[in-house]
Amino acid sequence: MPFLLIDPPHKIWTILRAWVPSPGCLQLLAYLEREGLDIEFMDCTINENPWGDLEERIRREKPDVVGISVTCTAFIYDGMNAASLVQALSPQTTIIMGGEHPSFMAEETLRDCPAIDYICVGEGEVTLAEFLRTLEKKDDLSRVLGLAYLDEKGNFIYTGDRPFIEDLDTLPLPAYHLANMEHPYIGLPSEGKRGLVVNFSRGCTFDCSFCSESAFYKRKWRRKSPGLIADELQLLKEKYHRDIFYVGDNTFNVTRDQGVGFIEEMLKRKTNQRFWLQSRADLVIRDRDLLDGFREAGVYQFMLGLEYHKDEVLRDIRKRHSVDEALKAMKLLKKHQLMVMATLLIGHWEETEEDRDAFLKFFGKYVDHFGLNIITPLPGTPFFNEMKETGRIKDWEYRNYDYLHAVMPTREVDDLEQLNFIYKNIMRRYYWRPRELIKLFSRNPILRHHHRFYITQVAFNIMTHEIFGNPLWVQPNYQEYRDYLVERDEALPPELIRLAK
Ligand code: B12
Ligand code: SF4
Image (cartoon, protein in one colour):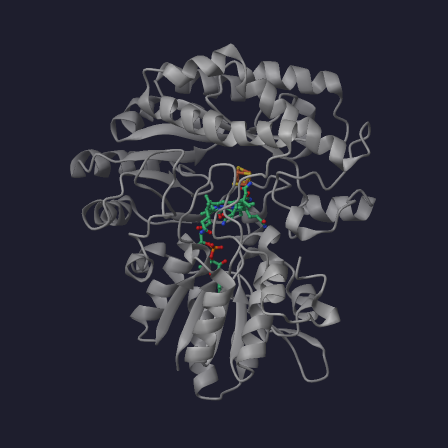
């Protein structure tokens, strides 16, 4: 029974212009392939004419089952539009959607978009394989754990939690052969020419209130063993010539042995690849004696979710480390010649102008890569529930839930546009300082490359947008679904108008 997995047309990450195949989709495909299922993949983000190409493929193949991946809340409408299009072109196709947002908001998603038949709630591999087999045999789908759907009477049905795969080493290597790895778009231009995003673990044992991954993986952490990680990296080097990676694991070194093993393997394999890892301040301090090893193994940067410069706020969002620890971790990384990327959150309820000045001063001193975000109540998180209850969420347009747009006011600033302006202003104040501009000529090639890319392309584009009204950058092949429908000269059913934005 032919199954087509779709990463629907959506915007790519405009801040770093990262254009990479979804690691979740590639892992899912590899599993299905090993199970002997008949699968194909379409990453619409690299198509020149994304909606038109999707239309053509569905018309041509009319697959029995289509899977749509929607990890980010901000892309849920794109996923719904893709489902509606598939249903309109091939009504007999069964449509299943998966990913973080639809898992958390299964009922809402099913009711908002009748074209979706099923939602896979949680981790996809085992559920999807079982779903496809059960569907083919026309057996009872209510017995497949991890599925959500509406029955004939419109009742919401959830079949129950699918247990997590205990050992991620049992998974095959991601199906890179099904992605168009040589496509000129695929890469991480801010990091280097042959960049990619990879994923070696799932979840995190901490419970920051705003974090959707910790909620999605129920505060559990599972990882691939260092040997298997090194096998994947070696394949990426030898077959696909990829040498610089953003390792998307929420927290790479939850346990110390993961770091030790990774260092050993990478030193042994000598693949000469570079890595940007994500971790936490307290874990960097714990593993301070491994930092030289990490550097020698190819790690050039740690991204730490340091969030804010005030302990009250860190306590409030359950960060479970202190500002002192954040400072210590940044200093340690610098001491060991590792770059510091900090992901930071502004837009807290009690935040004042003075706080923002202090924030910039505090982080401006050590950070090389300034990952500024606006705190966002991602559906599925404790923070979302709290904000919903207190009535603070002002913008319910999920497209804006990308950490770059304010969707909640602060006590002082009620106007969301004003908060968006404040966000851009902090970015501007950070990057246009002499200390940052000097980095354009840094002796560290990665830092130099990053700053040249970021300042001359991203920051410059934002500045000319604000001064002269030039359009903000979006990938050249991006098309709004609404525009595609206009191109097709087709009116949208009224119930879908909200989605077609
Ligand atoms: C890789 C990644 C990226 C890549 C995207 C690559 C791509 N083509 O999608 C890059 C770096 C470009 C990126 C950018 C952004 N990202 Co990002 N990213 C991640 C990251 C680090 C890893 C995702 C991953 O590989 N997970 C592991 C796999 C195994 O899990 P998975 O993808 O969820 O897939 C599983 C299930 O969901 C399910 N499943 C998924 N799809 C389907 C489909 C079907 C049919 C079925 C049955 C099942 C199924 O099965 C899969 C296997 O078990 C996560 C954080 C994290 N560690 O999870 C953030 C994360 C997904 N990103 C996030 C966000 C917000 C963004 C951005 C919008 C901006 C930003 N501020 O970061 C941008 C734009 C997104 C984009 N696609 O361009 C958020 C999303 C939160 C939310 N609820 O909205 C996350 C969770 C991080 C976070 N909390 O901030 N990102
Ligand atoms: S440490 Fe990072 S990944 Fe873990 S719960 Fe907090 S924000 Fe999420």
